[in-house]
Length: 175
Image 1 (cartoon, rainbow, N blue to C red):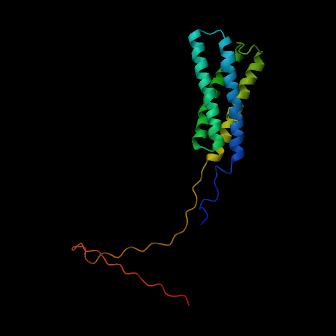
Image 2: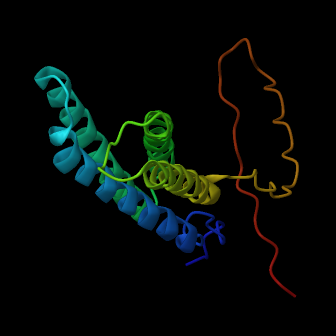
């Protein structure tokens, strides 16, 4: 029984960074689901727009939790999913911050509170994406030095199609 040639697994030994990214992604997922299910229906929007906003927001919230499960289990696709979710969340948060800064009260809070909330969400998505991508950056491992392999002896009888004979060489006895 021999040891595995892969002694250092970069994904396995970065559990803290994946765990922190998972925590922040779950936190953002709860915020997205809460805002989608409880705040969007109260906004003065047309019913069709509100329905689509709830559907897309719920899908985005569920994608957060799928990404959390992938991060905790060490799947490579999880970092990409966190990146996609963070990109969508940052885009929506920038829009929300701009709308809040112009005077529309989204949460029933003051202008500065709403803008601060969206800036906080942007920061948590950026940090979550950074820590999600960190353990999945792989560098090429050094190759083992191997002895050169001798070229095979050309067949002495290529025209006849007869195969070469191989002889077993006896192993010299140890002294």
